[in-house]
Length: 413
Image (cartoon, rainbow, N blue to C red; front, side):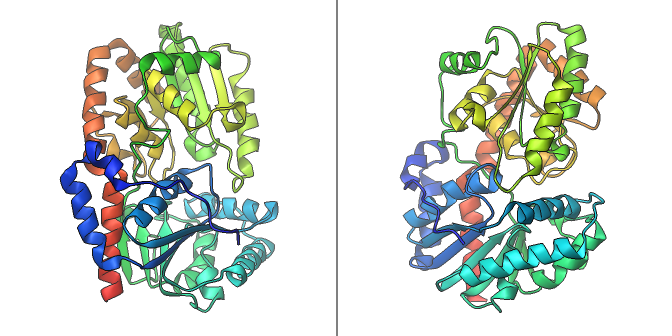
């Protein structure tokens, strides 16, 4: 297991202008009995993906509140992460093979990481299926409370994956899901809570940016800042359906030939399938000069993603399955209407006809994108409602509040 991930110190006080004085003081009061608590978060990657983004804010804010918080990332070779990617897809319902060899690769990876986990903690959070076997292989040593935090939708898992994982999940004291509907059948953990993910409004991806700077940044990547831009920000993954987004863009372009599309992704080391699907997306995109397929190795970091989201006329998140969809949260925070797939946590954020539109097909995606391009004042009003919805429900202070309240409850029980 890696050394603790280094994070930039943060102060809750910096968030006062965004969330208000009362919210910050309430958090400090809630955390007071937990000062000195030793908390560890364990996940699969320090960059590229929503969990890493959440933890990069969450850990320093826990420290600012007086908790001794750490974040560690597991070790794994390419074979291990190929298996865990298959598990991720299988747990979301994809019918894939799960051979005895794959199962042993996952077991051995978890056994090795469990052996390398040192130290004693009050609470250890294990995120998602990649490291989910650690408490079982440690025989629960190392923490008073083990919590599995599942960020994916396991309501209809492919049975071979779920039946394999369940005995390892029974080693946990408690679990956290994004929403109640995500809990898979016969889940063995008695204490279960529901905490939707959140964003940091002051992170480089979400901090305020001047419009002229956003336009200048996207222009560096070949986008014409004076023509309308459709945008999807997500991993290159079949569940995110970048192929369908390209098809929807082509339908829009028949009516609005000036429109452009950018697909902006991030390659994470725990997702070896991402490169294969990126290549497939490129082949589907073809030679269209108005279609831009970009990722972090092109120099698209958090600040650049911020610029793309601000420069877009319409943000799309046409997911077929979705854990939550933090890219939707980010776009709404920037006052952009979102056309999103009617799946996972997207309907928690996109209220159909209020903060954007929910769609179930390529044709519907194109239709709603065209509508927003043709009604800019209504699009602006939707975006304003979306920003307020995020401010009230999906900023990092709310995520902290929920977790601290659970820790007080669960440690007392």
